[in-house]
Each structure stands twice: as C-alpha cells, then as structure tokens.
Length: 376
Image (cartoon, rainbow, N blue to C red; front, side, top):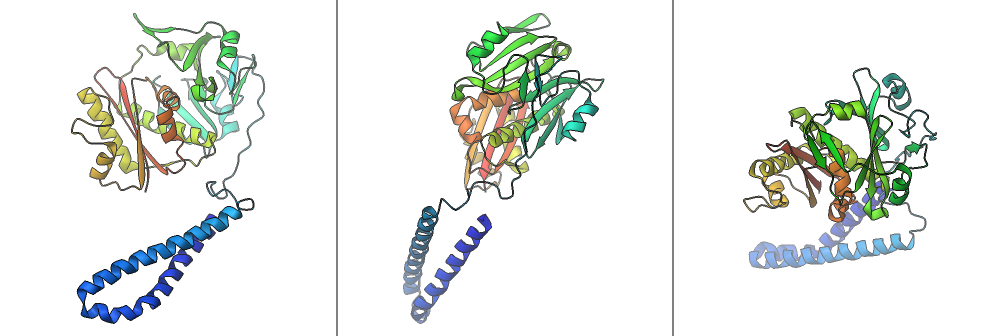
C-alpha cells in the first residue's frame, strides 16, 4: 500500500508539471529575448507550480484522512511477520528463566530452540554475547562458559518467567517485597563500588547468580529488562571497568545497536539500519571526549553533532545524538538512556532510519558512548 501511495504522488507531480508546462509555454518565446524577464517568469512559474502541487497534495491528504478507517497504518513495515511469543513455563532450577532458558543449560539445546545467533560479540565479562532474535522479536542475549553452558542471560522483552511471579511489567515495590534487600555495592578485589541512590535497577544475589532487574521510570517503575549472570562469571571479573580492547569497543557498539532495535520493536517501530559512515563520526567524538576529558554534544572546537556529520560528508534530512558515559556495559548504558526522556525520544523516534554507534575508553577504562541517528 505504501508503494501505491508513492506512485500516486509521483503521477500527481508529473501531471501537474505537464499541465503547467503547456500553460506557461506562451512565455517561452519572450524569455528567449529577455533574460531578465526569463528569471522573473521562471521564479513566478516555480512558485505557481509548487503552490499547485501543494494544493493537490492537500486534497490527497484530506482524501486519505476521510478514508482512514479503511486504510492501513503507513508506519508499519509491509509484510512484517509477527513472531509468536513462546509459552513461558515456571523455571525449576533457578528463580528466573528467559525464553524458558536457565543458567546451566547446554548451548546445543538452546540453539535447537532458538536457532543460530544473529550476532556474536565480546562483552565485559571476557565471554561473548550470542544474540538471538527474529527481526528483533523474541530478543535474547546469552553468554556461555568454557563448557558451553549458559552463564549469562538478558532480555528487554516479555520473555521473563519466575518462580515468584515477577515478570516484565511487575511493579518495583512488588519486586523488592518478593526478593528482599538488593545489593548496594559490588566488590571487586580490594575495592567496593557503591551503587548510586538514583539508580534505575536493583541487583540481587540469588542462588549462585547476580540478578539485575531494570525498571522503566516512564512506565510507573515497572520491570523492563532482566540480566542474570552466574556468580562464577561475575566474580571472575576482577575490576568494575575492564581494559577497552578493540573487540570490546566493537562489541559495545553492536550490542547498543541491537538493544536499541529491540526497544523499538517493543514499541511497534521499525528497526534501524546500521550506518558505517556515521559510526566513524560517532567514534571520533567518543574518542575526543575520552582523550580530552569532557562530556558534551558540543566539542572543544564548538562543533555540534550536525556540524560533525556534515564535515564528514554525511547528508541527512533529520538527525539526533545520544551520549552516555561511565556505564560499565552496553546494557547499563542502554537502560540508562531509555530512562532519560530526551534520549528515549531519539531511540523511539519513528522517523529515524539509520544509526551508527561509536565507543571509546579513557585512561581509566571508562567507556564513552555516542549514538548518531539520522534519516537521509
């Protein structure tokens, strides 16, 4: 149906131009003799033509508005296949499961259910996130240990099952009442890292694992995502921030991209396409902030995100930028952005089509994240 609309508009413009050409053809002879008059006539002609097309488009819009009850949603991707959610069952060996998968499950059994991963990237635990989804529906990230057993799980979709009734959409008060006191610090070696009082998550030590429950402040502080990490994997990470290798940098970038698209699909929006060129623009800004110890959309030369894109030869009809700093993983960065209204609006902007993400680390291994959104 969208293609039909494009054809109608194209035919309308051709029709207007055709009629307009013959209407104004009598002036052509005059314009050949008088360049000054030609400029004036062309300017008036263009203005008249634009007004004519605008009027016709307005009539077309009115027609579509009158027929809205029978027309489809133009923002929905044509032929988009809706994937059924699995029937969730209460886990047996752990308080929580995701997509009916629990810690300790075998990779072969997992992939018999989920199929092959869409992407494999390095994470902060020194293992890989295997990302499974169908066009970002039924989105799950899974990490395996050296024995190919599930050692970490994450989802931000309605795939959470538990022995205690907690699921996506559960109120924070109910989570705290059910799971008890959350952790307020995380110890790494001889250092304890205090969690901020205004955090949008709670972490619990449960049955040989660290369970992080993320809440959506814009949805009445209800459960929006869940991460489960085995105690052995979490405790093997010796520092809160880990060395920023090239593999980790790229891992964070692609993980943020996938997390963004999973959130968009949650909100009935089309996934964004990866843009390699704007990724380079984003990377350069993250590196500039990391090396020069600042955090701002405007760089030290006074350039805005839009200046930087244009300077790199990137043309757009609309664009936006999100920044994050200090979160020790792509997941924590994304959940924080989703709880900040301005950043959330960029992530869920229906008219954006492309996204490039750049990550850099400062001398203390703290990551800087830059997300550049655009429509061409």
